[in-house]
Length: 192
Image 1 (cartoon, rainbow, N blue to C red):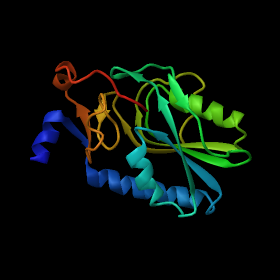
Image 2 (tube, rainbow, N blue to C red; image 1 turned 120 degrees about the vertical axis):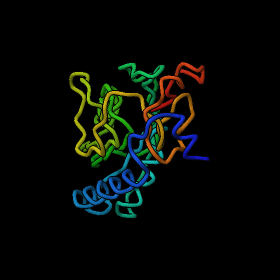
Image 3 (cartoon, helix red, strand yellow; image 1 turned 90 degrees about the horizontal axis):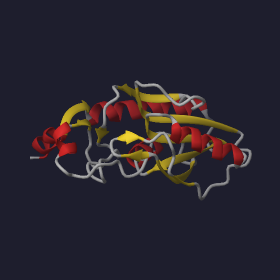
Image 4 (cartoon, rainbow, N blue to C red; image 1 turned 45 degrees about the horizontal axis):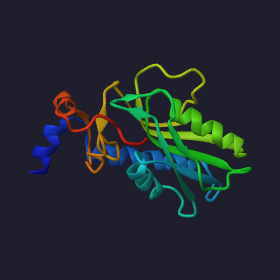
């Protein structure tokens, strides 16, 4: 039943198993790059929640975790402007920060977060994204050190990514079917 529902949502892009293996590999790379307890992991909500939780299981247990809420989508497109950056929580002064996000689209989210962290005194800022769309970025947007998968410039859902609050709980990542967007099921990614 679940497989039938998922196939109606859209074409499979990345299976649960493929995602799981890549997250484990990213975790190993991050473990090798940082000494235990030497960095703050900053997850961007809401989209990176599942990715951040799974990645957190792969890094040293003493890693400090902070979440910020960011919004940069209207409809199925990145606005190119961060409409809401709730940058509350975390002491970043003199600290290395690893920003974890679900998807790199225009680059505006990473750019705004990077700028804010530097204002707050972070000694270094690195980025890890699960997905990076193959498309032009805003000038000056930071390049992630870690990218899970490069994907086509299509609207995707699942594994934390949503469409009008729906489909975050899918274990796979799917290209949202055009019919789903046109069927009046909402018209936007809610946050990050």
